Each structure stands twice: as C-alpha cells, then as structure tokens.
Image (cartoon, rainbow, N blue to C red; front, side, top):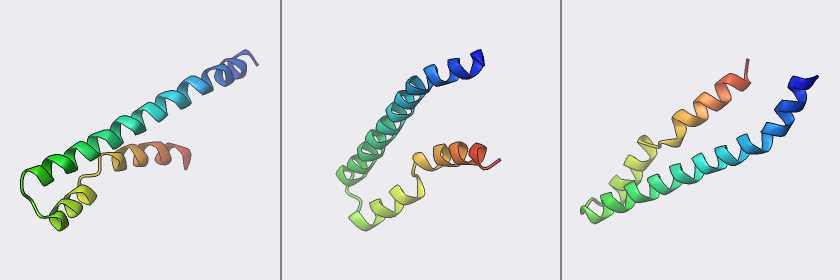
Length: 69
C-alpha cells in the first residue's frame, strides 16, 4: 500500500520530466532542420532527412514497448 502511495506521489514528477524530454527533443529537431536549410539543402531533402532521423522515434518505441507487455 505504501509503495502505491509513493508511486502516485511521484507520478506528477515523472510526467513533468517526460514533458521536458519531449520539449527538448522537438527543439533539437527544429534546430537540425534550420541548420540543414541554412546549409543550402533543398526543402524536400531536408523534410526527408527530418523524417528519417527523427530523434523522438526511439523514445516512442521505448515508451510504448514497455506498456504493451
């Protein structure tokens, strides 16, 4: 019972940390895109690279893989 209470008290902290990770990942993705565009690559190529090198996809796989068990 005490462990369950501790879990529910820690849940908001975990949620805010996850939101921070998502925010940082999105900022990195925008910076990567901006750098590629400033480097002179065409927008179509940049969009394809952003899709292929999405830093959030490994995070999503890790989060949802554990919840499927």
